[in-house]
Length: 165
Image (cartoon, rainbow, N blue to C red; front, side, top):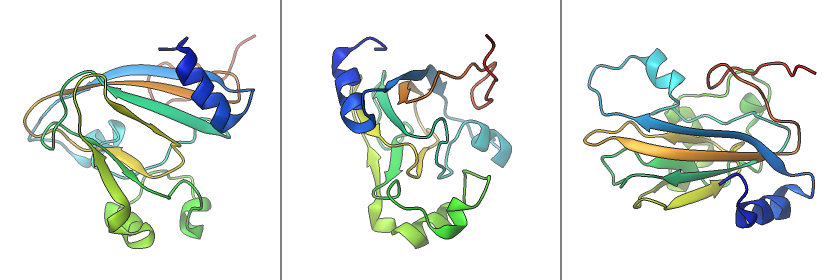
């Protein structure tokens, strides 16, 4: 995926010629009944958030398993990448209560992606999105992120690490 010419061409069309792969990850989301808010937040599940991986980014999300309504579909708020509300621009917190986000950007703009293995979506991750917690079957997802800066080194997902020369 990291060398796929189609992904690179799409990314360059959106981000410009400096576009490059800055992140990749493959992860499972499993159904569970006992989950606290901290665990959901760590997994970016059931909470609308935006990503700040680079100044400008584009992400490709692909399902590796069948994903239906009960298998934790990816959800995105259409148009939320264009202009954030003032309270979302001047905060260090990327995640916000779903009700607050949908009241500002419109519940009608929230859509979910359902599909089989290999299906996916391309998004500007500055827009609000989330993985919905699976209820009946696990979801395996592949993510490839493009940006305009040097790739980040991380010990675990979500922790930015300084570059070493």
